Image (cartoon, rainbow, N blue to C red; front, side, top):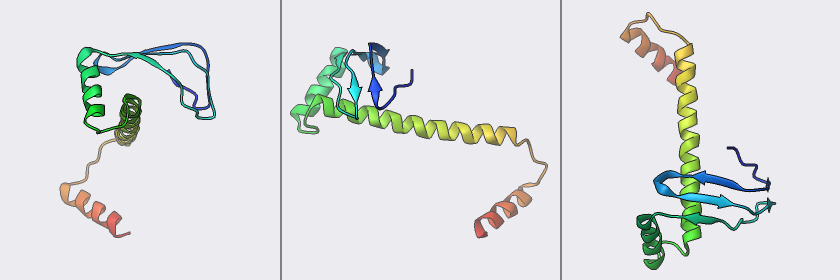
Length: 111
């Protein structure tokens, strides 16, 4: 479910990876932090607590936000690769030899 970056209303439930459940019931405007309530499996909670205790991050919230940013970045990269694959599949097959393909690739690099 896409989320508008400037306004969120109502309640949203989301089941994430590794047994993380997110419940949101606060309105967000102008990129202000939203208070969230999440349920974690015991191993995930212990890992978060260890990261904070070992000073790897200042809070669980900081770490969760960082993990979400990383997941969003990975999804963007996956989407880009998917688009490139779809474009390549739609372009059809070639009858060129390996040598012809290599020569064409080299000429594109030189251009």
